[in-house]
Image (cartoon, rainbow, N blue to C red; front, side, top):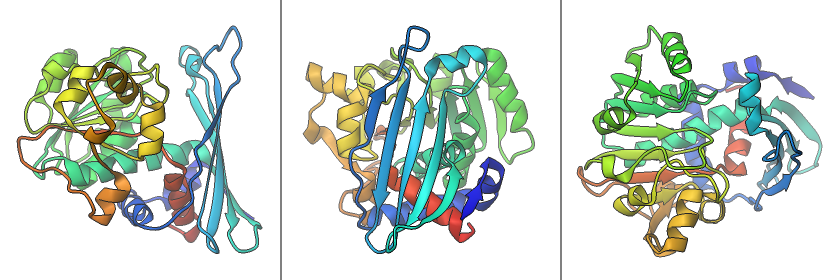
Length: 311
């Protein structure tokens, strides 16, 4: 049985190939049950959780990801999320591979946001703001730079030293990167605003948004978490990775639905509908688009299959 650690997995998951693989996967028929979430916290880690995420295609492949989320790890200087993925043969049920689920999650999450940007961001988008300085930040930046002609990147985080460190780590790319001190100014400047944080109260304000921008929200995965306020949701045309997941788990959407600022009919489409062409993407250069992802096991399965096939 094949084992792929983080380094081996990264070598097999070319970013463009992964974005294209997700595009194909969202067009295909795949069974993706609602993921199971268990609260496993204690007094030191009250928000700790265990997630179980299966997906399969009959007579093809099936897989499951086990994820732990310990938000307080940031105070220890450790990643908040750890994961392991197991891929099985869909015909015999035999295990085929065990993969580093943490690296898999980072890469497929960034690829899903980039896939959405391919459909939703203005074609000439060249300025990207990355909000958040966690382990996803560099992946999100590099993936977006594949689907749009990114020339300038600014990074904002609550810890400026982390923003500067990520910027330094991306030196030498075909785009300029620098840390941003003023979030409002950086948000107004950007063509694409991508957020990957564990915020429980809004960071990005709808009043800051201007026509033509694309807002990419990655971080919130419970109804109590939000990276953008209701004004941002109300001003934008909203798309999601999956309707079932986003409407149940995204704090931005759940709270906007509860207040009446959003209805389920206001969500124009999901990634499957965009990939299949059954809904349209951006309708005009002035439209503000918003993509909210909470993650789906379909993305994990597609990434695992690509990696095991050799990239």
